[in-house]
Length: 94
Image (cartoon, rainbow, N blue to C red):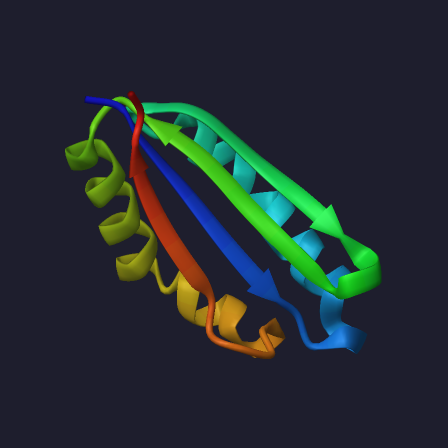
């Protein structure tokens, strides 16, 4: 069953552009990762907020991607730009 991820990220205001740039460089790899159907970055600069929206073929593909990013240290590098803890939600597509 297809899985969707919605991650809401609130940036440190003065680092918003850097967060956007760093995340933008990751998007092609995300889209090319096995099992990724869609991956989008939604921006609300006036709120210093970014939403990452992804759709995966199944939860196994999604979990493999998250493990891969964590092992590479990608998520850890992005934390320097983030003000509050990310809001991470998953959904099963009906």
